[in-house]
Image (cartoon, rainbow, N blue to C red; front, side, top):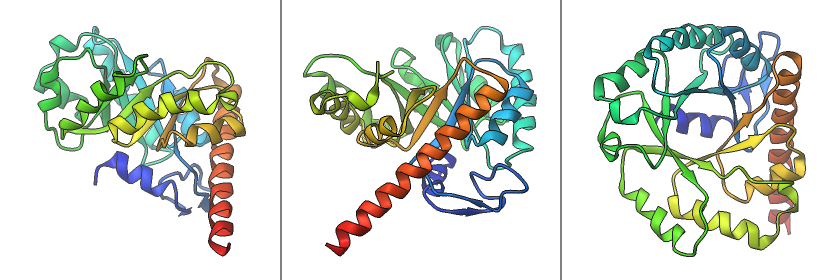
Length: 261
């Protein structure tokens, strides 16, 4: 089992000190959540990364444009600093450019930096899907596109065995909780087509109702993108974690009540 799948499984269980989701020495138990919580960081800043982990992030997702390889050495130090707060931390890198220059040795080097997964878009070279690098998982970003044939087109992605998960790059606009059933069905059609475990981007200040709606898409992790840093970012992470815990508890109670009926 890869680290991503292990994370998806563990977050739905209560964890004692030191397990996945453990965010502090004084916290003896991590409550189960409906999905894992990753935080997207634009900079390789060790202080910000450590702070995000202490606030409750299960993982971090960094961004690299594929241009300055020397900057990745800073990323390694950032990951090491963040892992001091959670040795089971999951770290990923979303590569936004320069894919044509990526060779096996380049990708293997990413694993040496402490990364557990990389995210590439549909525009990346297909040869990258053939790379099998131990302990470095591949995630493909799947955008939302209009058209009845799109779910059929994107379903072909399931032919590739090396994909560990997909990033649903939907960026749901407006208030997610006000989406109609028809709206959700369009997104769900794409979600069902890819079948892999799924991560989805969410913006700051997501509400409990928003989280309930997102669960209808069958996601295993949410990636919080925030423009804030410091105490405000930490509060957003903590609040989102609590929302994910609450949704899990409500789902559990609903299931239990249905069983008694």
